[in-house]
Length: 313
Length: 262
Figure 1: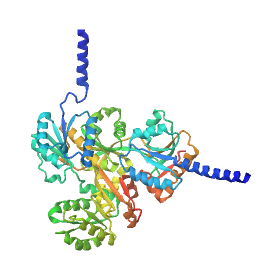
Figure 2 (figure 1 turned 30 degrees about the vertical axis):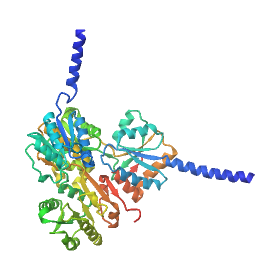
Figure 3 (figure 1 turned 120 degrees about the horizontal axis):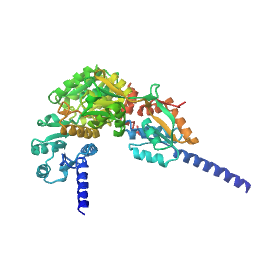
Figure 4 (figure 1 turned 180 degrees about the horizontal axis):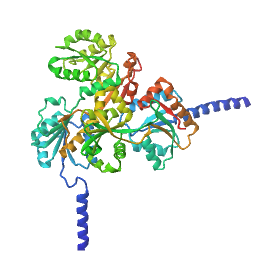
């Protein structure tokens, strides 16, 4: 009988040590700003998939499901003592950072991460592609485009526009810019800019995109002058943008998971915040055909979505 | 009475013939699944192919993003056309699924491609890939198998220390190396040519650490000997590149035509 019990104990011990990650405490805490938001939910799902494949354990805390989220998160961090906290969204990062106390921190889905306070040992995956990625992909689709124009506000976007210019020049593209102080100047700025360029680029500038009227004005002027518009988001496709390139959400989750595992092994590659590695491309075939634009047909296998003309057109 | 019967007979033949003819075409579908790409443009593919195929014999196109579901359809069906990768076909043939190649996809005159492991030039050999991220487009299983093949028996042990980052497309994988999100990329050789075209600076920074064996680009397969209806559909598929709309659809799959294997 004693022998049988001893064997049982051995089996239990073997199972305990053989299960990958079982012996470890809950290593990763995922803090999600709002799991009902599709973007956040997708990122979390992909993150967990990769963690699971690699036998990592995690605990999840969704801020939207807790009335007193900050207190409960603080208690959970103390209780679970995770080695790494992965925050999805600005709210999650801001709260987790207060209570993290020297823990490894990772974030994604944060709008304008450069505004955040980032401590040593904190890493992230940015929300937006870099301008260099966008220009490369733009060039892939439209290899003959040489001059791209954009409007911007000096106060909000000067640095970003300088980066765009530098990145574009490296690929032989000339960026022609026109700064605007307020939305009232957009019409005149477009009149000056559009005749000089092959394509107009909508950047995420709060003055240029201050309202629906500004957006309408841009697309009307571009259409009148038969200039294609490229945008950083596919929301502009329905307005008439010919191409939109943005970060692939699912890849952000997978990329964050790889980064988390590298952080766990203290093998993080250089740089604290990575740009997203995957892109999503939407092509407006209706506008493309209407403008008779030359484009690289071999790039079609990289398009996620092709939008045709509405049937009532 | 005879007249009534003959009118009725002609009417019956007309109706049932039309019915069966229409019905038989509705039953013909091209099923598509490709683990060598992770691009999720299924709605676009479905719309583009359906529009073309409905006007060329009333056929339909059904893309899949899940291997199991695609394989379940193959197991259930007795006919139809299946578009799949060479790697996947071999895996199914090993499981005794009686799929046979009917057509192979072409791109710029080639029917075959090989995959390349590219890194920046400071990574001199594969042993330096330990504890790094390798980016690739396709299913995790597929990228893993390509990497295993490229590493070879001698370096196979490295696999457990390499993290695979699945990205939507080859050019994302290559740019991930250029922009520092991955140390290496698995991509088709032709994708490197594309990178050379749109970002020659990044292309110059890369070199190849190894190649996979050559495989067909994309395969159109049937279960055993095709029925007359499948032969018809294969002919529609083979001639797609002759029409502008058909050619554009093939580009969505990364090919520009089809060829019959001799």
